Image (tube, rainbow, N blue to C red; front, side, top):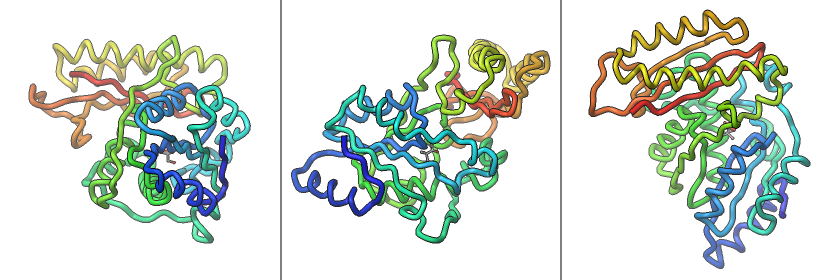
Amino acid sequence: MKIFHNKLDLHNCLSKYGQSSKSIGLVPTMGALHHGHLSLVNFGLNDNDFVVVSIFVNPTQFNNVEDLKKYPRTLERDVKLLKTVAEEEIIVYAPTVEDIYADNVTSKTFTFGGLENEMEGAFRPGHFDGVGTIVKRLLEIVKPQKAYFGQKDFQQLQIVKKLVEIHKIPTEIVGCPIFRADDGLAMSSRNERLTSKHRAAAPFIFKTLKSAKLKFGTESALKVTEWVTKQFENNNLLELEYFLIADVETLKPVKRKSTKKTYRAFIAAYAGDIRLIDNIALN
Ligand code: PAF
């Protein structure tokens, strides 16, 4: 497996593949890989000759310094895990902060047609500017035919689709299903920082989303939201930050249901000091 820490070496390698018309997929990650990431890599390998997995804890998308400091950095383990999927067809790009940002570690400012103002955008100021900056940079460096993003970060996925549309980047953005543990908890690098008590409590998030989906068949978004809020009030291990039923195109909260629209329910909740997010398709 080839591992590069700077874009020049990566370029040299990728230009050889370009000359022989090999297709390249990109799976952007922040490392601390888990089976959710591996499923993205497998989607990439099915569609392409090679997959570049970028591993980079992007400082500009963290609005909380402690979160950035504590974010797990496990490159050796990540590479081992990737080798269980494929050796020859995966290229790891694990750049330094200087390689990406030179001496200016700041994000560019983006607008994504208003998608950036909802949910994560409202609760994590500057987050999507950081995401936009790094994803655009990675797409420019790797120039993949396709790039793979998990639906757990559904808002991020919609924003990245908007990013390539606005900036006319010739990469197809592929959204991949949420990968869950057997008890329903959405896979996340943050899960490994949960205490055992909070890990045991966390599947409640998906359980509540599934019940909300059932209720949304017969009840209004407001009624479902009130019900979910109550469930979390009665749970003393998880603290709800937001629950929202939104139109997938605009990510704006639904006021009146329409059969012509597609909706998803979104949750962000704290399990101790770990922030977890999840979502579910409603129709
Ligand atoms: O979803 C993530 O892990 C990150 O936001 C991404 C897309 C790798 C950008 O840093």
